[in-house]
Length: 104
Image 1 (tube, one colour):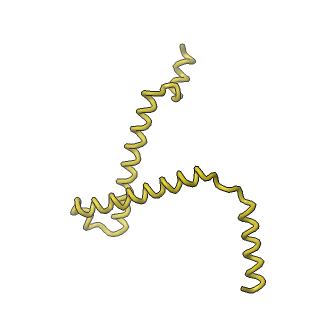
Image 2: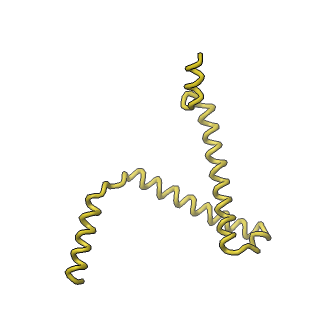
Image 3: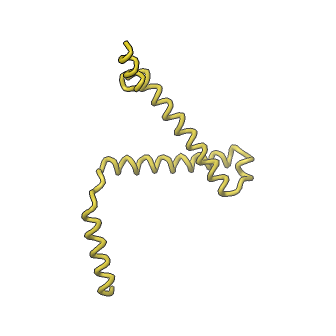
């Protein structure tokens, strides 16, 4: 490599070392959730291919949109289920609880 390329790499290395390192737990969780959503997308797309004649007639971009919409719906149902569970089991964590205590 040329001297210029070596200097550019050294400068990049120095910049990367100065950047704050990502917390390892956050990185692991981000990777896990990203992988889960990708797997869910593939599963939804595969199931739709076998279950829906309409899906099979869609263009590739429409198929991607269809599968992404399914993933979004599954995510919404999961988040709602967790939210309802927390609301029932830990009512003190909600903003509504603060309003109720303030008015009493």
